[in-house]
Length: 325
Ligand SMILES: Cc1cc2nc3c(=O)[nH]c(=O)nc-3n(C[C@H](O)[C@H](O)[C@H](O)COP(=O)(O)O)c2cc1C
Image 1 (tube, rainbow, N blue to C red):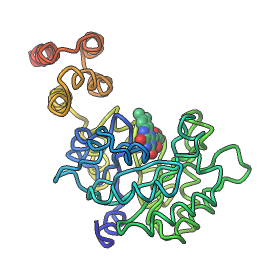
Image 2 (cartoon, protein in one colour; image 1 turned 90 degrees about the horizontal axis):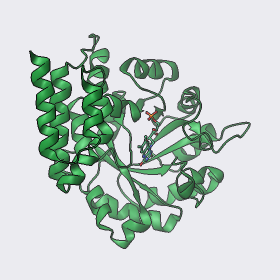
Image 3 (cartoon, protein in one colour; image 1 turned 135 degrees about the vertical axis):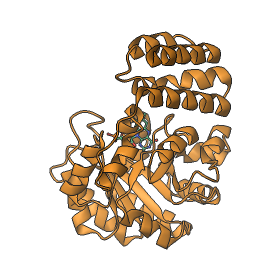
């Protein structure tokens, strides 16, 4: 993505689909984009396995022609390997490159990758500077407000320093690494970071609805917002964000739309994977599609024990027929 296109994307207060391992794959990105997501992020890609040439990563790096704008996210603990991996990721043609400095999961953060970088903000900035120098695409960073529980969170100072070394945007999941997913995200930190820099700051954490996104942007003055779990629960959130932006009342999805999109998602997952795996992989989205659907809880319980595509299709069609009468 050119520098101008990058600036234009963030000038429009974008709603971004978060990078989510085993969730934000090409199929889900396409669905969210069709519903109005302004840009998407890939699942994070481990630099060590990327450099080893793991086939799973090749799938993660493959971006279809219509999968744009999408950023590739990489993570690792070693700056030299991050630089090397960034060059490989750049060749895959993403809109921009994102460095994960926010993953709190102990097996990753303890080794110094992901949120592990927050234990040494100086090293994080030096690493980001190296990656920025190594590629010509815009480089962004996604992180948390601090490692925790610092008296003064490093995020505001970090935002300034990352801007100084050429990072083009910063996403802040407004929790500390130590919080994991406990407590609630404090959006004020993203707002304080945005106040001190000219690059876009993206507010993230606990934005579940279009109304939440509107409030987060108004309260923080951030350039954009990123949604993760809210999109899994309700991918129509992006359509609802668009409606609010345009001053319209959001239209909730009908039951027919819910079941129709579930079928479309299922078939796309099966086309992208081995049949059985494509079916079971779809289970993680079931709760969202079937929420508030009459008979949805029973259907979900049943499908959670079936890995047969025909079985899924028949059961979905049967519920559709029942509800249509
Ligand atoms: C299943 C799952 C997988 C995730 N994987 C990633 C990832 O690969 N990279 C990343 O930066 N964050 C990852 N995250 C964190 C999200 O991108 C996001 O920062 C976090 O969930 C907070 O936003 P939310 O409250 O909108 O979900 C993941 C979150 C979930 C729920």
